[in-house]
Length: 486
Ligand code: NOJ
Ligand code: NOJ
Image 1 (cartoon, helix red, strand yellow):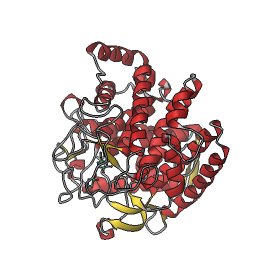
Image 2 (tube, rainbow, N blue to C red):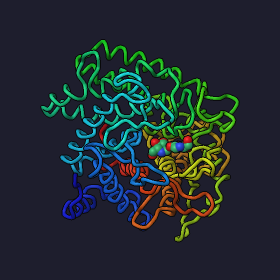
Image 3 (tube, protein in one colour):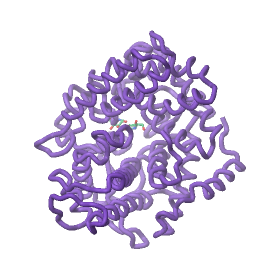
Image 4 (cartoon, helix red, strand yellow):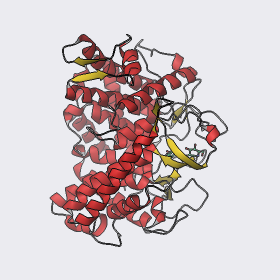
């Protein structure tokens, strides 16, 4: 499928400057703003190029074009769901193409679900298979499987399309492929919801494909999928399923509290470690997966969103750890003399250098983008509430942010410290973005990682998830443009 003719690319650029040129909100720094404009077009372009390539099936998404060292030429359920979410979120700019792309992805996902694989049988445990060949065939080599965040993320990626089709007289596609209110479940969303509701308490591999156990990231994705899935099930006149999904969602949400460690004072990534890497390889259990979970599946007004003190405390620990750990973070200013925040990695003990686990982990683009996004989302929540409570848990974070030791208190609009915090969140978000920009290659290219010592990119080149994570940040940053509805 050919997506970008030069005319189409031009149209996109024109549309981009017309309708998403909301840069004036942050007019302070032309270089950064211009780069963000460029990188938005560039990222969406590269995302589309990763979808349905000539030698892959329609609706498949390559994690990266890299086929050797490392071989990332596969359709990962997690990566593709996060990518499709952005395609859909940016649909206002390319409505027909976005819808067609999501429909292709839905049909490809249906084939995945119908394929027996090493996680198990089709429509049963096999739904937890982490990746497929780009042709749609099962991947047959050893892998960390199952990975149960995938089906949950896929539900979240497809619900917007399903709603849209129902409202625009295309319910036939929905009943046939996305959600038929009947058992056994043979439609994508319904089959994923059944899988999540039935198996969520079973251990699975984490999003980094290394540890088998119960994971915060996987659980919060499962919670949100069932929560939103229940609402959709009701609309589809499947009330018993809705009740079932909602009650499992409530149990999952309860289980998330147990990830708080009172001794460590942050949320730990994994509990009930049962396999994969050895627990001695990750004693801290400190992992950016918590922040990714809050962003990908947290819901404003609910626990474990970015304004939850437990998430804030975890963010603070992560930033401190990576700041101290990566030599590259000692460079704190870019060429223009503007501040750069630390590059963010996966977890402190990480040994995966993008090629093997004999090396040392590095900062990643998608996690650095994620931190920038979390700061902005936190800022929005504070603005909505019009107040900040400085608590024992969040005090270190906010004190560092404004460079002054805060006392336990309630700050309101009009208070200078309140204003300083809002300002600090925005400035630091931009500083994380400058960090990502600093290590980005020629033509806006982003691999998976940038080296902890010298900052050069490494690991899979043009990682599709790197671009998707930039788009996610971008739509939050320019939220007044209202690109995003669901
Ligand atoms: C590839 C995985 O995707 C990566 O996350 C992991 O660190 C290595 N394999 C080693 O298990
Ligand atoms: C390795 C990452 O750890 C994992 O999260 C991702 O799904 C794969 N690479 C593919 O990008």
